[in-house]
Length: 173
Ligand SMILES: [Zn+2]
Image 1 (tube, rainbow, N blue to C red):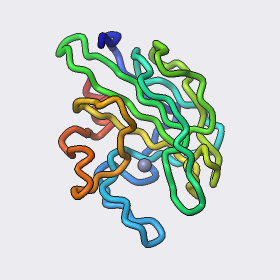
Image 2 (image 1 turned 90 degrees about the vertical axis):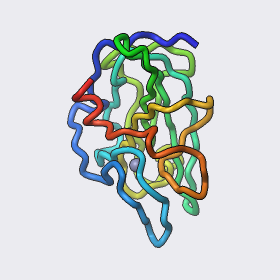
Image 3 (image 1 turned 180 degrees about the vertical axis):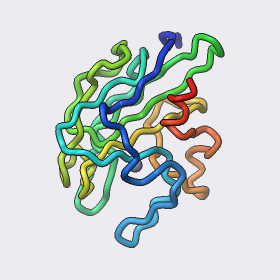
């Protein structure tokens, strides 16, 4: 599939600070080990606006509702971007959104508002106590299904080498 060229990248929040789990952290919440964190968590208030990091196409946008028993993605969007120099396709993932303003198939522009941060302990935020954005960049081959937020070797769902430190990737683009 042809994806739009992405000449420039920006961050998904106006005030982007990794004040939650960093990229590559081995995460355990309430005794449950989720594995190695494949994105960066930015804790911020519910309702905070989330922006597309660059021109691209929405390839997945769905509610993966969380429950009290099991945390999940909540509303998550995956956007495909194409580097015009290297011709390589990569994907940006934003999870735990309370509202989304895009749909699968939409072309989005750099800085376009795509959603808002979901409120604490709602199905939309994946039922996490702390409202936050999970933001990740995936550079591997995409199989047209939801991507994991954490890496566990036994699940064989992804490879660590396909994930990059998101803020660093954007700053070096
Ligand atoms: Zn996260």
